[in-house]
Image 1 (cartoon, rainbow, N blue to C red):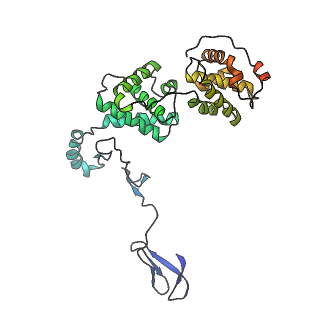
Image 2 (image 1 turned 30 degrees about the vertical axis):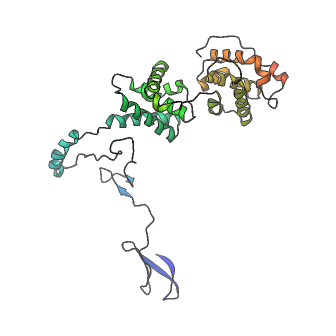
Image 3 (image 1 turned 90 degrees about the horizontal axis):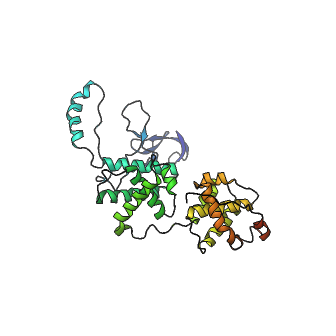
Length: 317
């Protein structure tokens, strides 16, 4: 009980709450101080199969516009105890006959969700990947194709469309052992299939798209990140025929060598998933232009002369 001012008693009195009627009643004179009040607490209900399970779920699953019935299908579960044997035998027979037509689609969405979580992607990217997969499945049967590669390619395209690019190697790491070549083929298949709908939505990948994430993985300072971003933006004006991710990795190596916190080439290779030989080759291409690329506020001309002279090496750009 709590204290509330009663107009009849003209003083603070203890009150009683009638939760069924929603009334607040004075315990001394019986006056209803407030009627039909709304209970704003959560109306927890238990949807667990077992009575002793702790499952305080308020609602069912969310509505999904990509599914035939919005994802609101009712599933008849097997009853417990002998009293439900007749119910189970009659209704249970109809369950397989009314199988969910979206079963494979739901499983695909689940797989995309798992991959997205492992890569730390936001919900908007996961939803976009689901939309792409739904369009692909609606237009052409996927029987006989590598489903993991298709799902990985959908996620890769979704990342590009949402300007949160991930490398193919990163997608491969969560796509159940799928290779770069398989995801590449799946991506080309999807782009060609949905060419009319997708248009130029994928855009062009730039080294700057990867920079902040790679720098964060390496624990670089804000000043180093800012300098690295300036360098990759300036490098776009140069005719350097390297992949954006290779340029990003080489720029990170250069910036860390000019700072007080030098990073080993091996650590940068692991963080960016770019081979050490590829980083060396990209570094060699950028080296003649460093005086134009490196911001003067970050390093002086004399500092550039002290950069290591990496020998050429073979890499898988």
